[in-house]
Image (cartoon, rainbow, N blue to C red; front, side, top):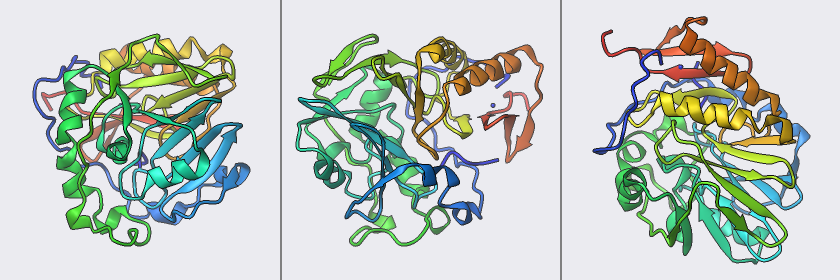
Length: 314
């Protein structure tokens, strides 16, 4: 979960080899805080899959939440009149396809906000997967996300309760998947009565993207923004690109009703994007100082923080 207590080192990293495994900060008491109070205001939707909690955020928009693993991943099912789109497929422990088919009988596209392991775990169970045409995406689609997933994702400290029946930590893998077609920046995905605009927002990873529902004022941000420490310390992070993406999304704030992030809490006010923009600017200007957090730099702001690697000279 992106919860641990952001890079003056603003190097533009590009994908040339598999990223090295980077252990994440861990709060041993994380499970004691659940459920988060924000969920009491949301409409819970029954599901037979105990690994997931499902909430209706807006008509035709469902948050599929995984509160029993430290990442607290949130995937979104967005339903139109002719088809649906699953934005991320979770960590791959529970059967997210079963959840999706219980919510809609329409054909489903899967599109990932990025291809970190905790957002692509259910991809292999779907036939129509859309993706970004990048070396980083292709590497992960072939199983390149497995180093961290296998070594760390399901250790007892990262779980809140038992795993689903038949799932064992030692056998856990992210299965490779096939991309049906590539999407492009600015492309409109027509679900029938609902259009979603693809916005490339690289930085957190080279293949990060957001989805913009202009008609309903909804912005799905993936890991570019969420409440909590935003992870910007892995080798594939490009803080310069992240800065440009944040500026792009902040310009949309006046047109939004709701921001829907991919971790912890599925709803945020549009003004948080302006605070995120100002936070990134403050880091660049040197007007905010970081606090050391388990070997990383944490820049703390209202409702979120940015967790970055220290300069390589330290």
